Length: 445
Image (cartoon, rainbow, N blue to C red; front, side, top):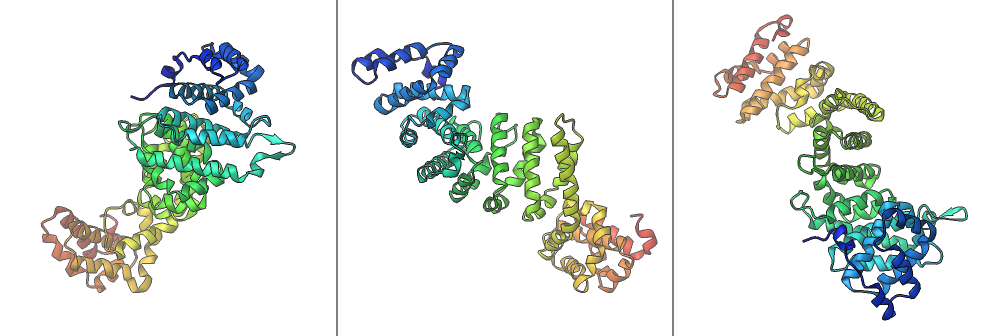
C-alpha cells in the first residue's frame, strides 16, 4: 500500500531524542518545535522570515539521520514547502549552502527503498535544479554557467524518469503515483534543451507516447495535459521530431483533442499540431488521418479562449494548403503500392478537380496501375475502389471516357458487374455508366 503525504505528516517524530543523541542541534530542535504541526499560514510566515535556516536544517537532518520514517517525514515537509511556493527553491542555491552536496543528497535519495522518498526526491530535485535559472549572481544567470555537475544531475534525473516510465503501464489501474510524478517533472525539465537531448538519447519519446491517452482512458485531466505539454515541448526540438513521426503520437494526440472538453488540453494539442505541420514529415499522416475534419469539428465548438480559436483557424488554413499540395503524392503512393482503401481523399471532390492533370503523368501511369489491379486483385475492397477511381477520372477529365476506353478498361470493368461482392458491383456499374455515356451526362452519377 502506497503512503500518502497526509499519512506521513501525521507522524510524531522524536526530535528531542535526536537532539539528546547529537543528531540535531538545540537550535534545530527549537526551529522544528516552532514549525512542526503548525498551520500552513504560520509555517509560511516562518519561512518568509527565516526560510534559509529551515532549509539548512532540513538538509542536515537528511544528511545525518537515515531512519526511514524520519527521512520520509522530512522530504514530505520540503515538498510541502515547495508546493506551496515554488520560489522557495531558490533558497537551496544560497551561497551559505553547497548546491553540489544538495544535488548529491537527493540523487542518493532517488535510489531509496521507499517509493514515497523517491517520488518526493524527484519533485524536490526538479524544483531545485530548475530554480538555478532564476538565481542570478551579478549580471550572469546560473543557467549560462551550467556546471558539469549540474549536467550530471540532469542526466541522472532523466535516466531515473525514463526508468519510471518504462516500468509503469500507462493505464489508470496500473498507474502508480510515481508515473504522474515522472510526467509532471518532465513537463518542467523538458523546457531545457539539454534535458530534451538527454531524453531523446534515452529513447524517452517512445516511453512517453503510450501515456498520451484521452480522458475516458486517463481520467486525470492534469496528467493528460502534462503529457501533451511534454510532447509540445519536444515538438520544438528537431532530433525529437523523427521519433514522434515514427510513433503513434499524432493519432493519439488527435484522440485526446477529439475526446477532451478541457480548453487547456485542446489548446496544447492544437499548438503541437501547429509545430508539427511545417516539419514536412507529418504531412502524409495528417492528411491520411483526416486532421482537417477534426479541426473543423473543433472549430464549431464553443471555446472561451481566443488564442485557441485563432490557433484552430490558422491550423485549418495551413492544413488546406498542405492538403492541396500533398494529397496527390499520398494518393499516388497508395495506388502504386496497390493498397487501395476508402481514404478521406476520395471523398473530396476538390481533390479530383484540382489534381486531374496529374493523372496524365508518365503516360497515364496511375490509370494503368488501376486497370492492372482490376485484372490481378482478389480483394473486393481494392476492386471497388479501383472502379470508383476510374469513374472519378472519367467524370473530371474532359477526355476521361475516351482515355479509359483506349486503355482497354471497359471490358475489365464490365466483367465485375457479376461480382459476388455488392460494393464491387455497385462501383463497377457506376464506372460502366460513365464509360457508356458521354461526358455531359457523367456528372449526374
